[in-house]
Amino acid sequence: MFWDNLQTTNTVSYLDSNNFINELDDDYNIFDMNKIRKINISNILRIENTVDLESLIIKMKEHESILINIDYIPSNNNKILNKLYSKRINQIYNYFSNHLKNTKVYLSSNYKIYLENKDA
Image (tube, rainbow, N blue to C red; front, side, top):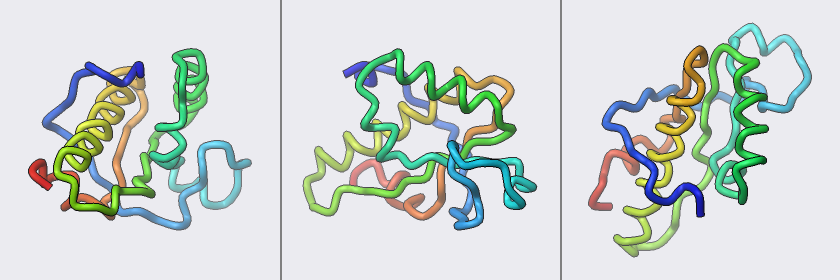
């Protein structure tokens, strides 16, 4: 998978998850006053090739800010799986931050404790 071996970061920006933030592909409406769009981490993890990933980045560049909404976490006690998932989210965040220089990138804060607990 192309996410493997990507760099991680120690600096992540969190933003409260908000139901009034439009999805990335939504049409313009009143909630765009926030100047932010969101995409679910589960949708990002479904991407299987770099062509689709580059298409997503082009869409993201159209917006001032992007919220990567963590809509899923593993629901088990497997420490290795939890650590891998946490690292993968971090890699995705870092990748988007590096490729979206003029766009702010945030993670939702719903699972902030989970993400900060590397030994989960």
